Amino acid sequence: MKEATPIEPPTTAEAVRDLLAQAVAEVKMRKLDTRTANALAYTGATLLKAIEVSSLESRLAALEGRRQREPDGDDALKSSGKTNGGS
Image 1 (tube, one colour):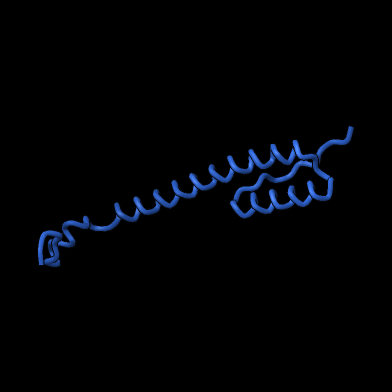
Image 2: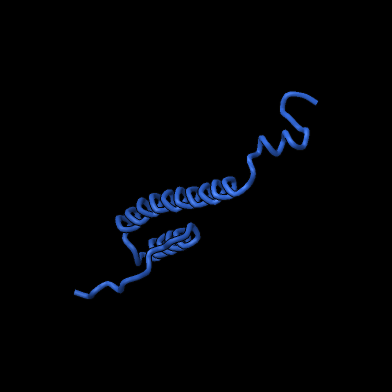
């Protein structure tokens, strides 16, 4: 039995897209069976969701870090004479 060559797992949405596109092409050329392609599609969709959540977590952490380094927004508004309550 031939051993599978290890590959790097996709770590970006673009890499998942490319992998799934390659799988579609291989199914059309009959190089990849539909059962394997179905498994790739399922795991690819799950991986895309995980990448999306991870990206959002990173972006949120960066925003929270920036907010902690900035002066309190309410105090900045009060000192500038701007409030939400009137003109």
